[in-house]
Image (cartoon, rainbow, N blue to C red; front, side):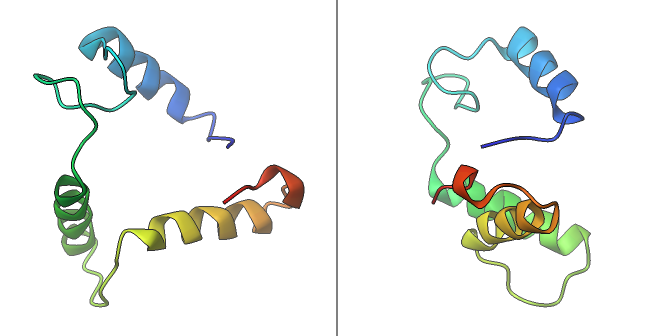
Length: 81
C-alpha cells in the first residue's frame, strides 16, 4: 500500500535508530509486534490530544486511509483490503 513521501525520512530514522529485527514497528525488548491494547491506547491519546469528541475505534484508521487514497484518485485495483 502506498505511503506519503513525507513519511520516508521518519521511517528511515526509526529503522536506523531502533533497528527492528522482524517487524517495522515492534516491542523493543521482545521484538514482537505491538499488542492491540497498545494501539488502542496510542489511538485514544491521539484522539484526546486532537480534542475529538466521538469514539474512534482502530478500524477507523484503515477506513480513513482508504478514503484518502480514493479521494486522491488512486487506482482502485491497487487498494486491497
